[in-house]
Length: 304
Ligand code: GLU
Image (cartoon, rainbow, N blue to C red):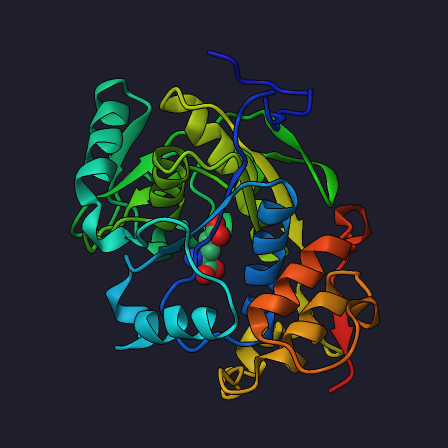
């Protein structure tokens, strides 16, 4: 088993392989400008590569879910001209796939049941390196063992990124003590099951990527390529998604928001020509002028 890694790991698209990208919102509210930027960025990179773009609804956390949000997100994407090329996948339907991966990891000793509560780990800043002598949890979570080694990859936008998993992250929860699947397991299983060749998403998930790569290796899966898009932040450093949650994008007026998202992706919306367009016509013009190399490798700070 390889535990150290100094070489960039992101696979490049093999000749003859079709690019497959995805947008994977959690149904925790309406889409806002930050999530539109991620949706548009993933759509443009997929279309620029002549590939497919899929939508996956990450609805594995019912306590955080807003009823009706998934439907609303899908309808908003459609109003903005972006439709999944294949049937939309809902993670809530896919427990059997996650269970298969989990059982394999348990059988091979790569994952283990853990009764440590949050309080038990407080002294270690919440980082799990080994179970405490007398854990106080009532029900076991399942965690993935991580190595005391750096796992690195070469992000298409941000460049090389590495993390020592044991020191910086700790053993990763795969299934929570409340019985819910953890995002890290579901995303790795689904990105592979859907044949995703490049994961394009907001840079808030940059630091989740090394643990996802480690998990891929533990279940014998290849690593896709990764591209982390700029996050929109307010000047005081708050993530836009939180602060403007009350300001969803307006499906009745998509072009101004598309133009703003395009500009935040480092592109020039003025090159698209004026006039009123349908969102689909706007997107076709945008993909014709889109330059992946101009997407900024840093977050965008707004003055609001
Ligand atoms: N569902 C995650 C979110 O809405 C995104 C997961 C991903 O793109 O890997 O933040």
